[in-house]
Length: 171
Image (cartoon, rainbow, N blue to C red; front, side):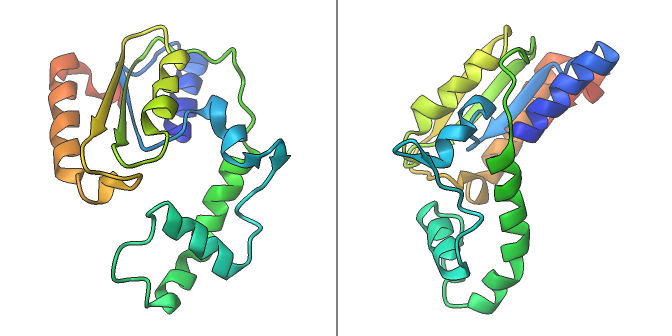
């Protein structure tokens, strides 16, 4: 979500063009990233945890598919990539002046703690229309199980926007 938002903003600044619509899913809005890695006023980055604690944190978020819990060799092979993602998120500095005019579609999972409240905050990053869809019986990693629905929804929205100008859609 953050990368799509930043790309959209850079398009606005550098080329005076914005996507017609921005799709974000299961992603905290950039203005809240500092809260994601802070507890009781203390910064608590996940990227510095040892492997076992880092894996446990990812499991709590539902980020390790069922059946792969027993295969720690595979999980440990992707830890450097996961840690790099967390470092990027943990070090991100939000600029409140970066507001888009782009319509935003935000998706979340019903069982993702704080999903509606947190994902609703994407609305503050646009002067355009904001759409929130919470997927029933889904958690944080709903994209793994609801990807077909999401693809259909994105295609539907893109077709409604402007068939002649699809390059202005960031997915």
